[in-house]
Structure formats: structure tokens, C-alpha cells
Image (cartoon, rainbow, N blue to C red):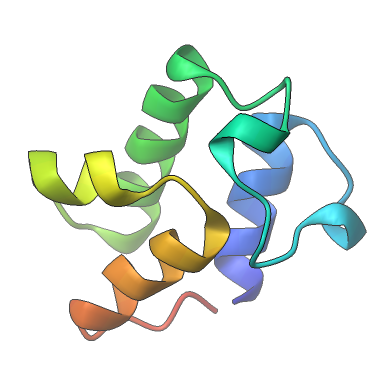
Length: 77
């Protein structure tokens, strides 16, 4: 999941070593509603997809983001 980890690190401005599947929107001061939108846009651009509203709302943790990408048949590397 290197590509996703890099996106999360860039958007949330945290070290890649601190990004785990358990990292969630409510656990990080850097991950708020505005950075969530930036994160969504970066993921859409990097993976050349258009996320649905339901997918965007569901992506509240790294684990859930990976799940959404996996369900679309994408490898987040």
C-alpha cells in the first residue's frame, strides 16, 4: 500500500511510519473534514477513479480506505 501511504503522509503531514490501518479520522488532529476532501481528491487522481458519496463517507480510517480500493479491484501500491 505504498502509494496510499505516501498520499496519506503528504495530505496529513505525518511520517509514513505512523500510518497504520487503525489510523482514523477521529484520532488525528490533522485529519479533519477539509483534509478528508483533499485526501479523496488525491486518491481519485492517483488511482484514476471517481469515488461515490457512499465510498467517501465510509473512508474514515486507513483500513476502510484500503477496503474501498480493494473492492474496486485496485492495488494501493
